Amino acid sequence: MSERRNLVSANEDLTYAREVVHLEIEALEGLLERLGEAFQRAVDAVYKCRGRVIVTGVGKAGIIGQKISATLASTGTPSHWVHAVEARHGDLGRVVSDDAALVLSNSGETEVVQLLPSLKKIGTPIIAITGHPESTLGRHSDIILDIGIVEEACPLGLAPSASTTAMLVLGDALALTVFQKRNLGREDYAFFHPGGDLGRRLILVASLMRTGEANPTAPADCTVRKALRIINDTPGSPGAVSLVDADGRLAGFFTDGDFRRLMQDGGAEVLERPVADFMTRQPKSVGLETLAAEAYRLMRQHRIDQVPVLDTEGRPAGLMDVQDWLDVEQGW
Image 1: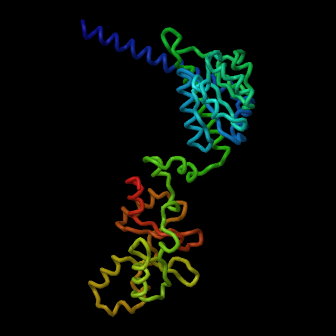
Image 2: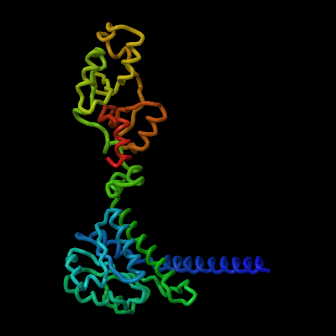
């Protein structure tokens, strides 16, 4: 009997859990119908903002606001989170007229409304995310992003749940639409995410490669001796040299390992022979836009320690060493 009661209880729990998910999906579907002129105005306001987007709220809406602020900042829109209560005790000094205020409150009647006179005095445009456009917040905002009257998934209909989900998704839509409008690329995104696995996966070879004096190159018709001297005299001891033709394009690659294998088969006389006789022709290489992680996988796959980095004309723009990637993984 006890097992049967547990089974019935589990079934009831799953039924209710599905109802929660269903209600939150309904809230999101309602957003699709409300995305229109007001949302476009909000996108334009954030895109043109010369200062920072100041996000504020209290309670659960405030927590959602923190996430939206973080998403804005990580996608190229400078943003600060300011707690609505703390703002009234000095943090309002963070706000200037060039900023834009994104204010979250489902009811539009929480403590955030006490900030409105100050924001108006500063001259900061106010964008509201609320479910009640007729509220105090709605009436005093420049732009209203209406999430609609949302039925909370809470059994009592009180705890913010579906409403905060709608706020979060609407905030994501705003931040990511502005991100898309800025036309930023992977390198820009990586700049805002230098730490952790995400940052490592987005770093381009161009950000890590050795350039200038640290990128050894030599004419393909030079001797082995000269090629070795260039390798040894290069800062950072890369252990390899890119060999170029008369037009400066990559013709081959020669490494310390190539030389060691060469000395096993021959004598010192090979030092005076053209390095072109021993270089690797058509070596593995990567482009400037290659992800550093991809370059590292290439080196591991082919058991090599360096790859030349080529520009669009096939000229060596840099050198990627396996140690450069390992330094990134270890946090420099």
